[in-house]
Length: 427
Image (cartoon, rainbow, N blue to C red; front, side, top):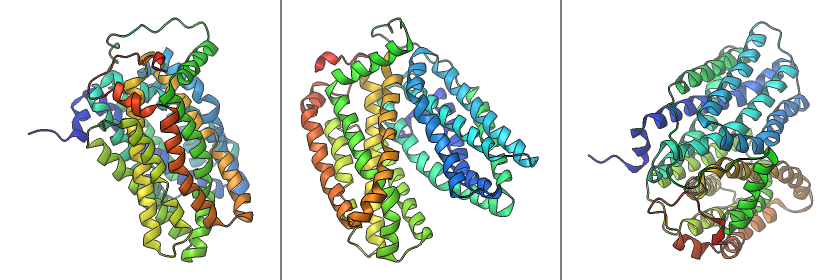
């Protein structure tokens, strides 16, 4: 009996170990999002203190993500992943001990949040770079789809729900204790991760003179590779125009148009996450599209179009349907994107390119959220939603044309495994 495409990666021992540890770890991350909030409140902190703790995580991530990509290309990925999980365990374990012994202070939480952000900065480039070493190329789409499925389910739904129940039944400290156990379990499982095999064929990674030289090499490859450059440029602009309206303005639209409260908004975000899980799983279950670049970019661009509806409807289910579609198309595009990086970027550059992608996707999030509020005061929210929804597919078409993607995806089919070096000379 043939194995469904989405489950093929599970035939490989190293993948089973890695995905099991990842699932437990991101479940703990989802618990932390709730436990941290109520632990701050338990320490008599208010919105300002909560903002400081949350910001420390973002600062750690953004400050170290480019260095994390360089480390993923220089060092054994298995050791990096183990080290990150050990640091996560140390940070959360210390907070748990201090909380249970009534010695926890706000600065302890801020320091732990910073370390968790740094850990994420090193983990994701290493995770992206190790997958092509432990899986055949044909299984990468399914592996990325599996991660795209479990992340919203565990980090955005199950983890926060579990933490809420533990906090309500016991205390924030008890929830943080459970998070420590999650990271301990993940670390133990990762100890069974075998050594990654050496890359087959392709040029050997050149000797690096310095960390700065490594970074310049990654940036130079990106600039000389049109499909990669224009995808990242699209992501920068899309982040700037999309994140703020969703994170900042949507709650006001829910209140004004649906007469909804925080629970209504939370439920809608849950539907958005469910859409992401469905989109990732469906993509993982299908072959990679022949027109993979243009399909990916148009999924993102056209998938944002339902945002235009959100400013006009007074129906909960219409709003929920629009958010489900947006989540599904966004996640489906991300599954394809992660697979393209792993199959088309030279193996000795993959960590840096992954971290650069992560950096540009996150760098303008605070700017977008900072701009959305003031703009919402002077421009009707429905008009902002409409303009963003209509502009997104236009931006996608521009990226496809300027990145010469229609020609490139035909010249570089992925039905077969490509040579490790997808040379920038294709420009």
